[in-house]
Image (cartoon, rainbow, N blue to C red):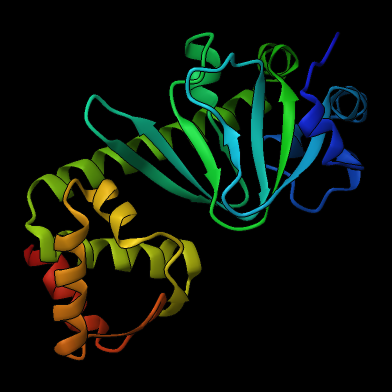
Length: 238
């Protein structure tokens, strides 16, 4: 089985040992010794710096990407502007639907900070799904979880005004991404606008209002949630 990667990726490859990796996916934990040996021969671990493109929309999809360390944004070019689909933190697979659904990547993935990615040959990945039921089950579970989250987020944002959408985004970053009420915003005001379907100016006004009301404290990109109960109320009431 052949595994093709670009010269740029080759230059950034890191040595890896799949069997002893402490950041295995739930699916990979169900592989046996022989399968781990096959995986190790048909995968590479690549380091990406903040801002580097990991997956490019429109390029040929030949690998499954597993985010081992770091934070990544998934984004898609639309007819008018770009749309940020999701912010993903490690560990997580990237792009499984586009890998199996079509031959080209339907969205891009860009590192929001330094990231480590394991690229796995897609044919090998399919073989594991066909031959290892427990591996396949965990992949299906991850896909279902992500799909339900996308449905819930889509319905929620569609029924809220800008203050509620911004509040929900900040709560998502705090609770699901950073697991802390104090964090550095990983995206710009314009990118937050791309996430929720509004302008950079509207996001800036909403953040300023939240700051003036002492609900958040914002210094550049350094953000602290000061009154989480009120931020939750704004998010819920929209």
